[in-house]
Image (cartoon, rainbow, N blue to C red; front, side):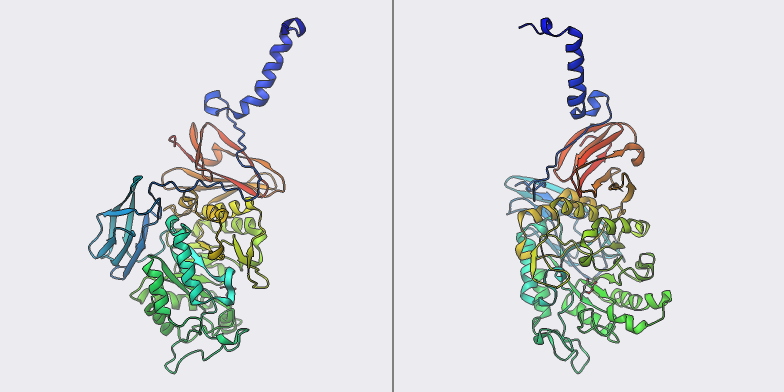
Length: 529
Ligand code: GLA
């Protein structure tokens, strides 16, 4: 049947135009149509959908582009590299005093004299090859990019043992987390003795007759433990308090600061979390800035005097605007608030609050909003055994995106023995991690949109911008970023970081459908990806 005989031609033309403008234009590439908006809906709300493509069989070298260390101290760096093993590693311009194990990619030795060393790392396997630059800066500052690792607290609380820590190191390697850049295996509270504890095996003399701090029975051989962690190319962290007792009531460093710090170094630790807690009782009503700074400054300078690189993490919950002086007293990072464990539903608020201190975030000095708690985590209120998080999958993507955009340390605090494919995909997306590890060290800037949505913009060293489009609402929402907000103009390439996919070129804005309590995270750059 001839359509024209049924519908007048004008009506047919009108209907086709309506069809094209309603359905096709929004999905077309903005640069081809000359339009400016593309509605993009790549994310389904399916539970625990894995967005991160599996690592390819060919090598992909990850890790920071810059690495800080102090001259002549022991050096340890495991080249993070995805791809099928065996992989053969080589390094061009490796300074004298450093040695590479070409099959593991672990570099050891002693840090060279002060200066900058520009290395090129190469990785080859039967499927392909990759190379990446790494600048070693032998100077004063450590943690030139945010520390990445694991901490036992939110998984194991006061149940932690030497065995669990060793297993965490094993899982760090076998899960692929180390290949994505995670390095530190950090013990939190409860490794020392306590005057009283629910587990009587953790009760005992706090120090020996020379004043050396005692470990409890679950940590019979600290040096053996760090040797084990180091043998895998990973680093080890420990925990203490400037007060007489830690938060969970175990021995603190009060009046033994130097002795304990030397002990930690001789045990081979590479990271110290220093947790205020019972020090509240020491400085009592003295709320002066100096009183807040005193114990942190003291430990900061002790650590600097040791012949070991120990990253210093201040934990005093953001008191006295620590972000303003944490770096000056020797801190590499500082907690900006109370335990996130008790405010997990507030990850959006906590991240936004951290952006208020964005000017203090810089290489070697990081705002720390607390750990990444996804996967199997211990019940925060009851310090219970690990259970699968009830956090919406979309919010877990948002959580990791926020921590990356604000340049927070990426410390996972869940049960490593229960890592599943979904959790690994959230933790190990190498392009999202690259945003976190960017060498500018910038903390993102928030632009509030509608009540329940906002964008976060982070400038990257290569001139591009990482942008998170966040939706805090209970329903899917459209969120857009306009080029004026990014201070750019003209055609730019947009890449979806969670899916690691190029989305095409856009002229004035990018708009996306963002899942409830979720994120769409993109990288926007001048050149085509
Ligand atoms: C405090 C800290 C936590 C954890 C516990 C250990 O609450 O903020 O991160 O270290 O102490 O007792």
